[in-house]
View (cartoon, one colour):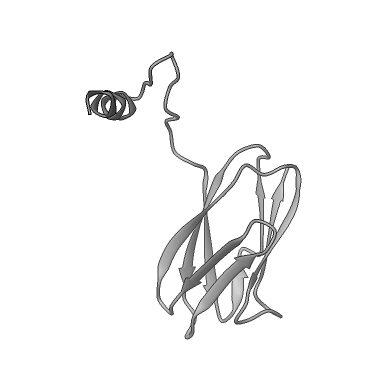
Length: 113
């Protein structure tokens, strides 16, 4: 019990035993609006090697299902909803996301450089 309390204290204070620090700071965040089945913006350029946060707002009349099979990401938002997904550290390259409910118009490309 004491060990658990000590670990919780160190984690809360920002340092762990052995000199390891808990990562601090905000994730780079990118706002994405989905309106009438279209992602705005449709392309986002990000720094490779960093996690990022996509903040999604569904302004459409129906639901949205953001999906990327490669990263195993799936997020469903009802009309008018706002939420986010955190992407893992990305290697340089292009990553495609699709709105499963609007697969023809609902495409988002994340480009890691």
